[in-house]
Image (cartoon, rainbow, N blue to C red; front, side, top):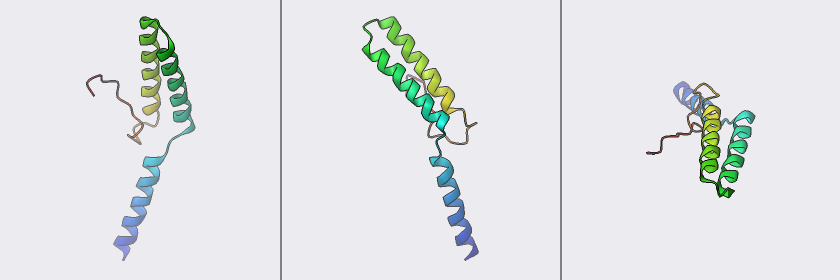
Amino acid sequence: MKKTILAVAALFAFTGLAACESQADKAAEAKADSLEAQAAATPNEAQEKALNEKADIIEQQAGNADGGATTQNTPTTDPAK
């Protein structure tokens, strides 16, 4: 019985941690989305690339802001993936 209770408690704790998304993560994602929308709207290819790169940096920093506590929000900028 104790093992079952501990397993359930651990599952709830893990689920809560994995689902956690901070306000800073949400704000960074909104900023990156805005930059990506600007990039899609510009006819200038160099400006489009620069805006997308800036958005990638913001997403990467936000994904790592929690010190690796979660991995679901850690984007990859690897073009091979």
